[in-house]
Amino acid sequence: MRIGLSSVYAWRPHVEHLVYLNELLVEDGHETCFLVCDAQSPSCYTRELRGSSRAKECPACVLGGLRSFVSGPFDSLREDGSDLFGDQFKAMSHSSVCTLVRTEAESDERRSDFSQAHRRLIPAVRRAYASARAWIQKRRLEGILLFNGRMDVTRGILEAAKDAGIPVVTVERTWFSDGLLLTPNDGPLALTPHHQLNERYREHPLTRGQALLVARRIASRFLQTNTTEWRSYNLNARRISWPANQEGLKVLILPSSRNEVEGHPDWQTEWSTSGEAIDAVLRHLRVDKSAVVLRCHPNWAERIGQRTGELSETYYLDWAERNNVHAIRSADNSSSLSLMDEADLVIVNGGSAVFEAGALGKPCVTVSPAAYSEAGNCAAVYSNGMLERCEAVLSLSKKEIVKRTLRAGYTHNYRHSQFTQYVRAKSPTRFVYYEGGSAKRIIDLLKSGRLQPDDATVAVDTADEDEVCEMIIARDWGRIASLAPDEEPALPLKRIRRRAALRWLDRVRDLMPSGDT
Image (tube, rainbow, N blue to C red; front, side):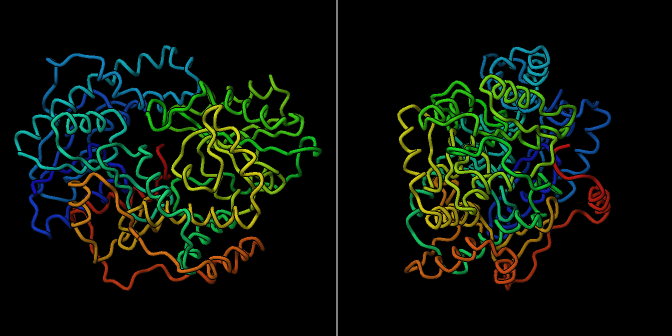
């Protein structure tokens, strides 16, 4: 096949991930080429995020991008798309602008900084779309591998491929680091592949090795040794007692930001806001709000580029004040884990706290679709007609919740994530690669448009899974870590390296903080 690969940003480790996939394709006899920006875009997410100039950002991006790994052939974003019109380019840049401004409510999209960022990004998306259409035609492409596909320029390339009738697979880092997130014909927010695999495997028990792999991931969060996740929160936290009324059902609300998923159809609910959804759940369960605690996400106190999450925090603090709910600010170092430990019910809106809460045997409700919402580990409640699921999850035993959490975690980490045996994280930005991966998985995904499980094996009974569940219920995190199997595959290393003259880039970047700052 003639396959194009594109990463217009030089972010680590995403360029390296595409280079790994390119090597698999070339080894299998496929013809590849590349689309890069080459400082042609009039604006982009990175420059908007940092408020920096073309002169500062573009040379570093060109230097650290695909050209520093492979020899081409290359094409760049040279078509300005000035003959193209329509609201679709505004829609394509919408997700980036929401993330840049860190919106929470629909009213935030009426801010002047929102509209200004939108106006600056629309020409960039139009140029990316036009250039991608020209690239597809020039190189007679039969498939595309694309970094991200959600943000501005990358979204323009994704939509160009779809409009040209070319199958495309977007590539991202996984939520919990190992393997690659490969999504057919959509960006990384797509939930359909998650739902399909969760529905297929949620009733199947895990082997001992599978259960231990997930248990170690969860234990690392309790032990604060989860050093490969993109961001770690609530470090050096202080344990606290339940700060609200301890009579009745103690409900902990752990909201996360909605700006990154805003506008994607897979994440839509009947609720107009998360606050409305939480109100509906509390009202349905007749919860005394004096026993409710809202813990603002620690991320909202962190600066990403030029912005903190003040819009999200303000929204939820206002909600808490209106409802006389005890609120803990994002910058507070109170332990979220200690709050989960004391809660009778945890409410989230798609965040990953369900894995820690589930490991503690706590029933959870998500008021938003999520990667795990069809896994059976929590109550998925995103309409009034789904509220009866709250009672169902409250009736589950602690062991059943733990078991379902393990299965959800394994499907997410080792079935949905691809190439997990061959792509391993050593830090948020450093990865090692192993021989043994096959291009067939990429080609099959391009041709079928349907994700297959990276690991399809299941256990014949629940005996081994039950043993691991008991260790989790005992909260023996140290023992779990010591018993977890060595994850390093017995395979030779595959060298994925920059050109020799540019390897100093990674040594410099290792001194910089991880995350999208």
